[in-house]
Length: 433
Ligand code: IMP
Image 1 (tube, helix red, strand yellow):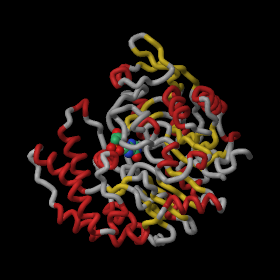
Image 2: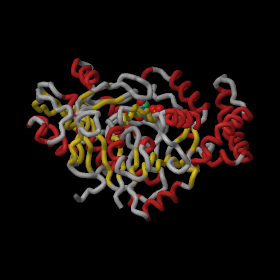
Image 3: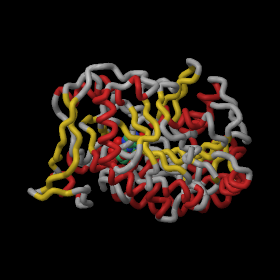
Image 4: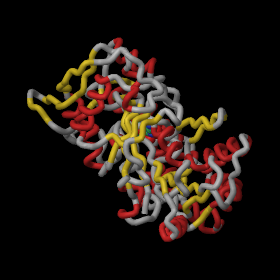
């Protein structure tokens, strides 16, 4: 078994897209296991630009099977739009190469409306800064056992019953808010209209993964968001509504925990966050601005400017421990080129006491003052480096210090958005070699 799970170790946007694409070339099966179309990345292959949100990255490569697992929440309209866009770009999408779990929950238009209405109603400090895609409300319905699932699309009677039950809940809330109610027949008609576009892809995904296991196929699990956005372990309540850790790759696709394989934690050489919530190493100064500009830190899905700050080793160590990270892929080192000195956060001071971890209480998280260690920067360019010999000694020192502090090795170093500008230390698909 040589499977790999790719997960973010910060607040998402660590540069997973390039690494996932790089690994997907060597995988047979690529699986999404959580999140929805709140995720997004851009792939550039042979000069062609592909924008992906819900579809696994393997979809743009011939001969790969792409799977949307049961842990994903699927907006059927967003998925069909994405599929059609890719077809127009010449990507072959068939029942063979794209499989959707029959037991995945759907995101409905009402979920997006609830998400956006709640955000609009929230005042400054309580705003989560969601992507407005209906992710939270859809997961709420899933754990509330009210969700409409992919399999329901194949059975009109069931669909009508399930929609009726769902609307008893939602229309009561809408009435309470003085909002217009959702019409049952209208929603059912919309779902029946879109169903034929999805149903050919619907499959018993866990069986396909079992076949992959038996035939020694390489499976790549593609995580979305990052560890600190995990609904259990992240900076709650400023999190997304799914588990973003590698453990979720098992439950969110239907395999055993032993099948997840090498856990590759994608880690940016500094820190960014989009949306609200605590961010101990955030920089409001010109260094923060410089990181944002050099790193082109704008959200792929919403276009929002990302908040930027120094590398937070306390946070990444916590993510690595929580998520069982085997090794990290360090990205965007070149963004730090030209800074005289660099700071790494090595501890948190809260009310005068030093912590080696981020406590769960939101009030404590908001009070964190970072304890920094200062390292010398480098003036040379690391952009596009393809071997350690191409890196200045101070950059190597920075990387080695990160490894020490987070207690996890660097398996890959990415030095530009180009796929070949990657230094491989340990092949995640062949960890022993
Ligand atoms: P939601 O997932 O739309 O509910 O948003 C919840 C929080 O997660 C917000 O702070 C979003 O900015 C953040 N978030 C969701 N998806 C991503 C992502 O793909 N990258 C970075 N942040 C994300």
